[in-house]
Length: 275
DNA sequence: CCGACGTCCTGCTAGC
DNA sequence: TGCTAGCAGGACGTCG
Image 1 (cartoon, rainbow, N blue to C red):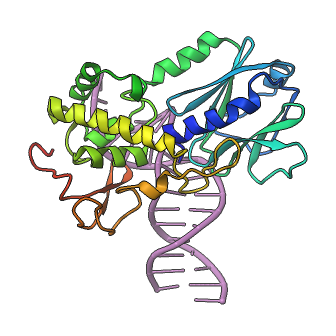
Image 2 (tube, rainbow, N blue to C red):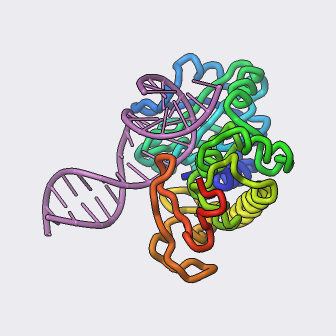
Image 3 (cartoon, rainbow, N blue to C red):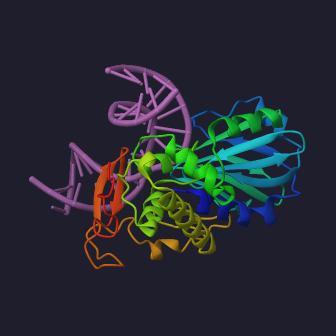
């Protein structure tokens, strides 16, 4: 489940291998992604140089000279470079021929997507329309105000990409634990100090996860095929029944906002305005 | 307008 | 041992 730290790691590890390279051609797999690759995109991309690679939320942008490719890894997506003679793995949907290397997009569950934008302004609009601020650029006031605007449980707000870009199920649970807040607590009921504690916790958790190259819990691998290491430091995610690292009590798993939700009932009390 | 929920997709696993 | 139902979840559409 690539979230912000995993996507950031993919971008960082890919950067030295793709920037400055030219796309010589595109090979399209048989199965369709959520939005299929249009045949007209292939000639538009062929011959173009990759000038930059960047991240916004969980989205990866490949900046071609005058156009953009926008990649979302979904749950099981992988964007990696390969030697041209390396056998093509199952579920490989796109191969960008970079000459001496391949950039391949692989996604077994097909929740991912690759889109082409002829116009960079359209690409920017696409992202800006659905994404809120980057966690690292959030100022305390904007954050507190946006949490006050919704009555949903705080976890649902964290998962909403329009509230803050890049947080998914893992880092929502981890951030709430570090902040000592119940995932069920209503967003608008957070006090100003609680909101600030959550912002700080979220930033710390995400930074730390980036330092560990993200979390490999399913099939996540970075742009060079290396796994992340942050899964060893999970405090609550996937630790159902295991002892809380702070109080020793069992970590609980419940369902919230349609997602499995892990918390420590003792360290994240639902009382004091709990819902 | 807002929030809750269903849908997509397939590999893995818990449970019989 | 072998089978299958159910679970995993990011984005988005739909419904109340």
